Length: 182
Image (cartoon, rainbow, N blue to C red; front, top):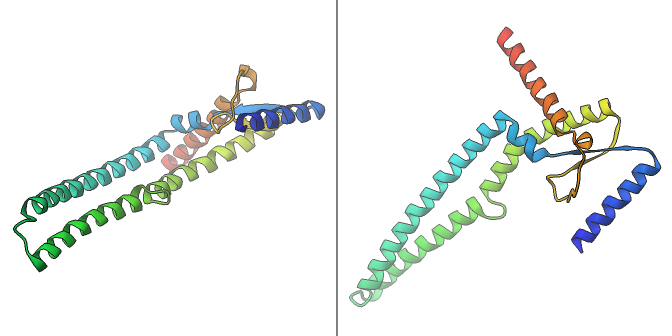
């Protein structure tokens, strides 16, 4: 059903575009992001942070497993308050692991917020470059083939990815030249 809606929307856009003689272009923003050195550096920092969090969770899990095993082995020997105290200690560790996992890697966790903060400035740069390219080439519609649009066939003349990348990289080198002159 989703593919039908996408195909219907794309067909409607094509018919509307031909009726008004609008030019259509396609851009691959994921390719552009991967070609930007600043994005790669930021993504490497993010991956480093994720690795740190994963190691932290692994150490917490190892500590939990050790305490849980010790508790299970000594359960028979413990009495009353000692039993409750040790059981509470193990349950608190388990709860702490689940809470930390949820806060860091959950749907609204830190990883998603960091990734959004990482990508957003680069997306703004890309969209500004796309607007510049649209004005230069007189395009009416620009599709992003990396975002859930199934492009079955694409002629190179309609793919404006490299032009957008050129605009971005030219803007980056101009900023570097200005910084070096100062």
